[in-house]
Structures are given as C-alpha cells and as structure tokens.
Length: 277
Length: 99
Image (cartoon, rainbow over all chains, first blue to last red):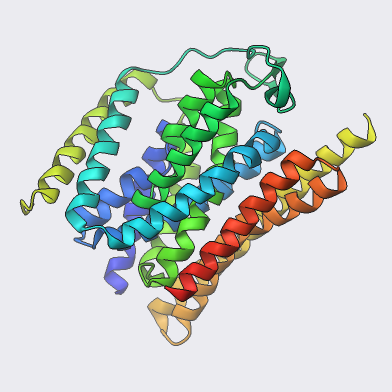
C-alpha cells in the first residue's frame, strides 16, 4: 500500500492540475487514470472521483464566495433539482455494467473535447432583462479584470432547471461534477455572465457530488486508502494549476488537452468493447 | 447598505467560513491518516474515513446554514429550494445506509 500512495497522489496531482488549468473538475481525468492505469473498477474510480469533486469544489468556493462571484440564490434554486438527479444517477450506476459505464464516460469525454475544440465562449458583461421569478434571481459582482460592477438578470429558468436535473444524473452516474453541462447552460441559455456561471456552478457541484457520494461511500466503493492520497493530490494540483493558469497559452493548452481527451475516450470505448489495454 | 443586504453579506461570510473550516479539518484528517498508514497502520483507516465524512459534511452544513439565513430573511422561494436540497441529501444518506 505504501508504494501506491505516491502513485495515487500523483494521479490526483495530475488530475487536479490539468482540471484547474482547463476550468474542469478533476473527475474527468481521475476516472480514466484510476481505471486504465491502475485497473480499478469503474464504481470505485467514480466513488473516489466524487470525493475529489467535493474537495475541489469546496476549496474553490472559498474564493468565489469571498469575492461574491457565486450567485447563492440561483445556486439553491437550480441545485434543488440537480441533487434529485444526482441521487437517481448514483442509484442507477450501482446496477449498470462496467462496460456500459465506460462507454457512457467515453461519450462524455467526446462531448467535453468537442466543447473545448470550439474554444472559449464570448463573455457578456450583462444579461438580458427578465421579469417574474427569473428577475428576482438577479445579482451583481465586481469584475476585477474590467474594473467594473457587472449586473445581470437570469432568463429561461425552466430550461436551466431541466438542464440542471440532467447534469445531476450525469454527475451521479459517472462521478464528474456536472459543470460541463451547467456552465454552458447558465452562460448561453440563462444569460448569466460566464464568470458568475463558473462560480455558481462550482458551488453547486460540491453539493451535487455529496448527494451521490453518500451512496458510493456506504456501498463500499470509496476506499479511504485510495481516496485520501488522490484527494490531497487533487487539492495540491488544483492550487498549483490555478497559480499557473494565467501564464499558459489558452489555445495551445486546449489543443493538447483535446488530443488527450480524444485519446482517452477511444481507450474507454475499447475498454467498453472488452478490448484489454 | 440596508438590513437585508447586510444579512445577505453575512450569508456569504458564513458560507465562506464553513467551507474554510471544513476543508482544513478534512485535509488535516486525511493527511494524518495517510502518515499513520505509512508508519504504523492501526487507526489510520478510521482517521481517513473521518476525514472523508467531514469533507462530505461540509457542503451539507453549508446548505443548513443557508436554510437558517433564508428563514431569517423570509426569502420563501430560496428557503423552499434549500430545504429540498437538505431533504434530498438526508434522503440519500438514509438510502445509502439501507441499500
């Protein structure tokens, strides 16, 4: 076990570092590394990843809450349906086969890779006007890079709640944060500025992961000796990644990681098809 | 700043504090458990399990704090939403224990 501690911490470090550089949770990298490199069962990798997702979300939320970037009111409204989806996803995952989970995960990797290949979205500074319930979720934050207060209103709340439920199912089923669905939906559909969308999604992701992590934990899929070094590695990696993120060239980083995600997706599909790697 | 805005500011400060304390305590327990595991074993697994439970409890506690603040603020829409979240978290724990 002692020898593996460093390997597991290294996997967490690499996942946290790359995830932080790209604005993703560590789960998208932890699961392939634990299954393909160490041969752990999918459910164990997903359970470990969920603990890591809670750690990274809680750590990043400290800054986002202090800066008041996260919209707490919007987060609780969307999260009320996301947690239900997460529990359903986790209950479903327990009964699904390894190969189906691997294939589904490969599909999510392809989705993320395609989103990254398209490049970053244009950042709006203000959302659109909206009345009714959506209007009461309006918020504002101070944008340091623009040296101005950005005010916004929330649009199309029902569409956002439907997407949040789907994000919860994906999170519970596959052990990823669900931010890959929530952030684009908040940004593109609900007119929430991308910085506030990332911060709000980040706050939600940790709560979503807790809902399904309880189930993995008590089903025996979370092994403390595996989870502890991975979680510590993820936190250190995410911290280091956040310090370096602003220096890296976004375009070249994206190209490299689209290639990595694409290759990993192919490996997961091969695993799903029963081809040993 | 109005009294309502001051209370929302207090909500942000309280949630920040919960996250800081929870993450620090969980990482300290996980690190201590890992060190024990390398050198002696014994209660290492129990200490690491405690770290995982503290970590999982941190966002749950944050939701509970939000419930209290939304009740004080009489923000019925958000109070209902945060109560749903807390109920689902509690239900998932009960489900997990019974499965």
